[in-house]
Length: 142
Image 1 (cartoon, helix red, strand yellow):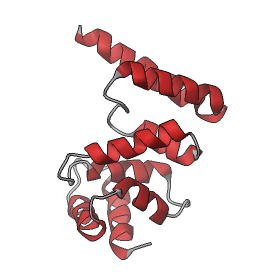
Image 2 (spheres, rainbow, N blue to C red):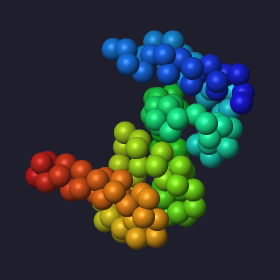
Image 3 (cartoon, rainbow, N blue to C red):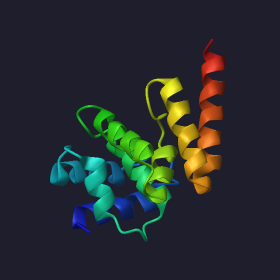
Image 4 (tube, rainbow, N blue to C red):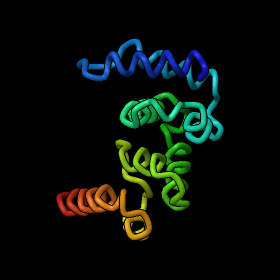
């Protein structure tokens, strides 16, 4: 694993329960400087060992949204592709744990996650939880 990525993950792990990130935010910015923004989610996923807890990867990806020029839009598209492709359960769990709902269109999210839940039972509860949460947030806004 690249040293800048390891440092960012280590600092996130240290600061994750603090009131706010301080050193981790700068370390994540360095990850963007080293790796660039093109295909970032896929390249980082390939670089991060599977032994790194998924929650730490999720926090890294959430912080990256604040460091990219498009506020994480390209990364969100990448993880939406992970959900459509339905290949790697680790990718699926990470994609569904981010601070943003996948897919700008709620109907598309429901369709993709319903298909995913039927195809991969181990993520069915996460799919249902995410769909229920989005429906509740949509209803509370009306």
